[in-house]
Every structure is written in C-alpha cells, then in structure tokens.
Amino acid sequence: MIALGCDHGGFAMMQEVKKHLEQRGLEYMDFGCSSEESVDYPEYAKLAAGAVASGECDKGILICGTGIGISIAANKVKGIRAALCHDCFSAQATREHNDANMLAMGARVIGPGLALRIVDIFLDTPFSNDERHIRRIDMIEE
Ligand code: RB5
Image 1 (cartoon, rainbow, N blue to C red):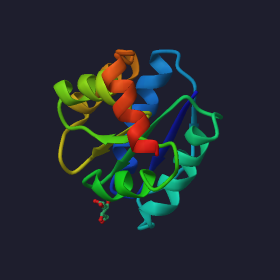
Image 2 (image 1 turned 45 degrees about the horizontal axis):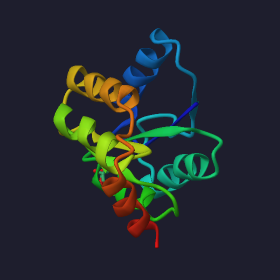
Image 3 (image 1 turned 180 degrees about the vertical axis):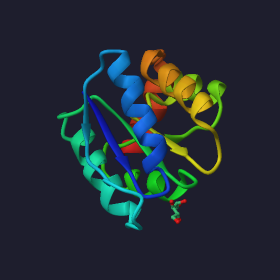
Image 4 (image 1 turned 135 degrees about the vertical axis):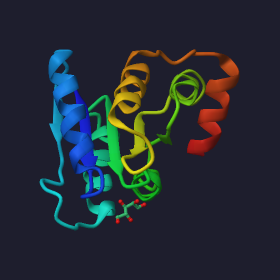
C-alpha cells in the first residue's frame, strides 16, 4: 500500500501518478489534497508520513511545487526517510543506500514523464541490506 500526499502545486502531477499506479495494479491511499486550491503542504505531508510510519502503508509519494517543503515536513515524522529526487540515479541510490520510505518530487521542477520513471525506480528498487548502510540508517534514528 502506497501513501500519497500533495499540495495544490503537486495536485495535477499526483493525478498522473495515481493513474500510473492503477495501470500497474498498485494500491494506494490518497491523503489529499483534493484540488488545485491553495492549501498548506505540512498537513498532507504529515498525514501521508504518519501512515508510512505506523506501517499502514509500506511507502509513500509526496508532491508539492518544489518537493522541498513537503519533504522537510515528512522528515519530521519519526521513522520517515523522505528523499527528494528529480533524477533516476538518485531514486535508485536512495532506495539502495538510505532505504528511503517516501519519495518527494516537485511538479514545478520536472515533468510527468520523468516523474513516473522516478516513481517506478523508487518502488521497484530494493534496499541493498549492506551492513554499512544499515549502520548509517540506524545512526539517523538514534
Ligand atoms: C506552494 O506555492 C509551494 O510553496 C509549495 O508547493 C512548495 O514548493 C513548498 O516547498
């Protein structure tokens, strides 16, 4: 189960992400927002991040205008490792090295074609399970 959260800046792109997940047969929980009307991104970041932190969802996808605000807010939730990615290399590396459990993107930064590629890489790349990466992740949680 994938938790989704966006603000007005990310709303249109999130609709593309939802269509894409449906085409892939992947289930999601949409924590909003629900239109392009101006809202406050921390509210939606925290709802989606809370669902990942509690185990209700396995991973999450967050979108705002830049991806910055929504990732900062999500990373305040204990247990969340939200990675802001606008390229395929970072999306793969953050899964392998950081075991990132949320992906953040900025809809004003990249287009939907690249965003969907990044979503696929993020969802399909397993954590490396390397000892050094586990140690470093544990240090983040301390
Ligand atoms: C909203 O205008 C914008 O500030 C927000 O989407 C995001 O870019 C914040 O980091």
